[in-house]
Amino acid sequence: MTTQIHYTLAMTRPETHRFEVTLEVRGANTPYIDLTLPVWTPGSYLVREFARHVEQFHAETSDGNPLSWTRLNKGCWRIHLPMSREFRVRYEVYANDLSVRTSHLDTTHGYFNGANLFMYLDGFKEQPVTLEIQAPPGWHASIALPQNGQGWYEAESYDLLVDSPGEVGTHRVLRFEALGKPHEVALWGSGNEDEATLVRDLKQIVEGVAQMFEGQLPYERYLFIVHLGDRLGGGLEHRNSTTLAVDRWSFFPYSEYEKFLRLAVHEFFHVWLVKRIRPHNLGPFDYTQEVYTPLLWVMEGFTTYYDVMLLRRLGLVTTQRCLDLLAERIAAYRLQPGRLIQSLEESSLTAWIKFYRQDENYVNSGISYYLKGGLVALMLDLHLRLSSQNKHSLDDVVCQLWAQYGQRDVGFTPEEFLAVLAEIGGPEMEGYLGRFARGMEELPLEAFLSAAGLELEGRCTDEMLPVWTGLSLKQEAGKLIVKHVLRDSPAERAGIMANDQLVALNGYQLTEEKFLTARLKEQRPGNTITLHLFRYAMLTETHLTLAPAPCDSALLRPIKNPTSLQRHILESWLKALGER
Image (tube, rainbow, N blue to C red):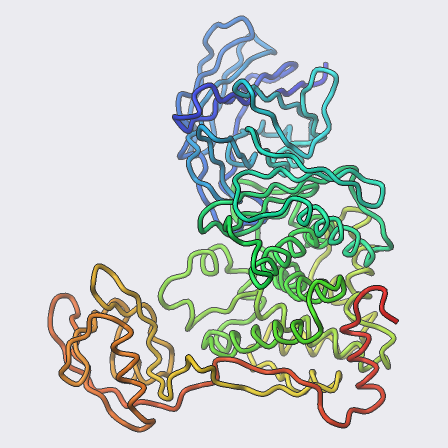
């Protein structure tokens, strides 16, 4: 008899924020079964200890007789099965965290990520499972899984179950067809969205991204879960769906809507890169501990690069806006001291303890594999175009990874990734990865941008002060608190520390940052100011010598007399689909 695994998810008291989970197992031919709840969810690389929200755990036979059980550790329960091959487990999970990576239940809806809620049977993760949703009256469910004749959702494995988040409630459901496949938008919340525009643009994104992959969609059905609320933000990719959390007023003006579109492109591109084109240990997953790969910078960095480039290809931003977005990222990268301290591979490996757990020193010691990875992808793309006389690009690398690994749904090692890169770009690719992925040298962006006849100019915006302190401040209860002190800055040399409270500048009281800003506008580089501050409730005086302000923005523009190859690369690189 094969083992049958059936989950029931109920929400009879949504006001308590407690999901009620029942797990029924038939055909368990062992003296005991270990049930484990994941400590992390794929796509969000932080141990979150979901078992801390489990309550009222109970095990029994199929006819209701109690079974003994033992909690082995923080996330594992052992069920003893002396005589029974069938049993059920009931427990509740407190869910009051509205984010794309967690679960949230209240009187308006129930949103869940399976890794937060569903325990798996050790040794049986590859078995098919079914899921039954018992929703309050009037609620409906949106989940990217097929349903059987009983209305139960079916997943071919536990991995697919937890990779299929659900939105349950009275949400709006918008539908469209793209490339012959059905797509749905589960829309919770409201703001200044326009449903027709949203459907039109998501359809364009689906069809446009698929063109990179010969116009083929690797799924039968796709679900966009969109949460609209105050100050929401973030996205998380799944195999056949995504969750997008955005501020409810994100759809007007277009400068705000553009951010939503970029997020949608980013998460949808993950259908290929991450969910199918992936490092070898990013699926099937070990849910009990961190899973390390030095290639997160490829997965997220390449996707970050393409979320801008695909907006341009789809005609959703102009050529100049595309260049401006790239320039913004370059400026942000160069303002972060940690770019010269941490490599991309180290940033990928330490995401679990550093990128997802940023403290006041992260800006000095770390670099985002999204940000720097996207810029390295830009450099690789332009180099491939230049070295091949514009016959090859980064698209060829991604598509080769798709053909070689993604279509077969097998992962690759760092060595296999390098082999594909070298196949397209030649043996020098190993040196580039050594310098820009494993090494920490400054990215020579100007040299690579010249392939497309572009020059990069650093600029200071009107908001930038004429002098630089290296301080980042925050306002707390009427106090001016130091948030960050940048490495090798005037503030660091003056001995100022994070969490110091600034109280006076040149003898004048400081209570608001705007007063400090106004006084600094009166200063010039080389001037020395006197600051008084409280540190551990003790008054301290320090003297800070002001430095010239670094550039806080950048401009990308074509050079005046490009070569024919530079002009050809620029035109093809920034060409929208359908343009001649």
